[in-house]
Image (cartoon, rainbow, N blue to C red; front, side, top):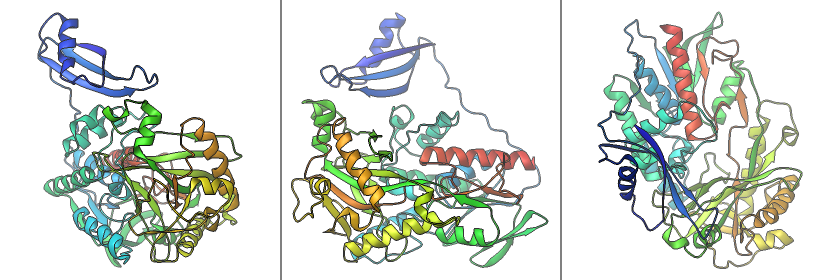
Length: 504
């Protein structure tokens, strides 16, 4: 088998790769697989696709992971939360012969999509079924990005599982893979079906309300107030499970404050981003993205969750607060590009040593944004040009906001503290030197982006069990151990493996 690095021009079809392999092999290709595909746009006059492939003139079988099926007394394992951490934990437990019970306070992803659409249309919020809560987690209403900065050996397995459960095949080899929101919901539904087929359980409308510990070991969980005996509990509750954090803290669960980032969503015309990144030939290339970091201010400013051709979506999970997020469908064919533009938030900003002080800090910004826009879950907006000079905005230019609940002009200072607004101003100007047009006058800032990651960390030991409580496994982004779909899924797999090791 031969591994090759090949390049194609944007106008060349991917099918040409096989012919290039045959030239190198001097023989017909009988086995061919794309390992990675990425766009090299560093030289705008020489943009090209770069492929890493493996090929052979012989028939080859792709190696598949081998999982050990163990027959033993079945431990009763509950997973609280059906986001990526919970779902991938459930998949790995099944691979080890353990049939998990997944409990989710929200609704199935199909019904959840209806609830999200209803909220965007009417402004009536369901606190249990929204962009933050429900099957698939917050990532189910995003761009479905599967790129990660971690080098976990589990990344390959996770991508293969996404493809197995219905993601486009290219997810397995793109340098910056994304599933798209609609595809991601199909994948989630397929994973649920598999869990059920293999003897696991998935219970919706079921909240973890309490748990029982005797002699330092978990003995039971309370679901909607009803006690059920349990051997293990995986806490995959997500970064917005504020009421659950309060319950856990009240029970003596050891947790600490965790720094995060907060700011706004910034929107540009997608065509402007494409021209800045690719040059004149941008229309023939995939929708351009960007990733920017500025250290020009005292606090770091960075872009996050960039959604080419996407929209800014209402993402509140509590009444009386405005929260924004970004979402793209697989085609990324919307008029605007948007990204979170956020600033480092420090522990001293919280004003308290309480473990949940970061939650209170988030909530204060969200309620201020709600008030600034006049209620109704409208979002406050300001033009970049006006923000940079401290003026109020009164009209839009070419860039029109995509936030579905409607917007109202209000200054960023109305909901973000001074330390964050000043860093944003400096950061935007600095980023404009890295991406032409980033500080365009009519680019739109929509607030508030407050749920970038969990503001708490639930402490756990090397065995991945909660500090002082055997049988409880804090897991994923909500508990402070991940930052996105891929890393959350990887943490879920690690926790499942720890549980399997303990019981078998």
